[in-house]
Image (cartoon, rainbow, N blue to C red; front, side, top):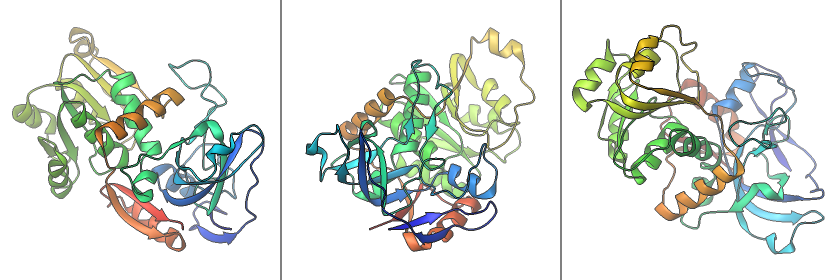
Length: 332
């Protein structure tokens, strides 16, 4: 089978021939039709991820058809169209992942290949309203957005939400999920174009986070926020605290802007603000996310679709940060 492989950090991905995996006990073999990139894949390529083990077949997001089952797996899975929950071994505590928690795509071989084997417990029926490219764009970003919005921040209909960094896959799914749940949503982005694209998806408005004192200017437009979903951290995080309503929840799932250096404790305790870290999600989070997407007929935003052979170009596009939505590879 063909597979994308990272051999050395700092080097572009290669397409190589590998033996097709054989599903073991409790596993299924997926014939991958489409797979999507995440920043994790690029960070591994660049050597900016913890505990890198190369060579590796990257890719955490995938959708395809069950092409084989291992011992103990019902034959009825054969031929089913599925999406893959990319995380395994969450652990017994639903509040936080355990030490054995892993994400598909390193060290386990990932979805950027013609076939991948995964635990049968990690496959779910593909939402019928999605094609394979759309379905492949859902898993990692979808479960991350769902958990931070609903499990961690407890979003309710009618609340005002701010999603930072509109353009990324998780941020856009958070925008779509919040809108589907009946929230009013605003965004930040580094370009006016992406803010306009977010408004076309239903966002009420937004502001460029490169604008001086953007938090105050956004509050003048929108008022305060009940829930804020952040992927950046860094210096801008303090502005989120300033524009938070009393009792607000700030969910953070990334650190693209780096370390948070200055926070005023008085603002936190006087306004009773909760700061909630979130990473990926449990199997229950994933199942609820998939059901929510099916019920609300949500379609992930696709930035661009590349053939598997053009994986290096897809990696470059993600590294450049120009995308609006998910970058997808069509496998077969």
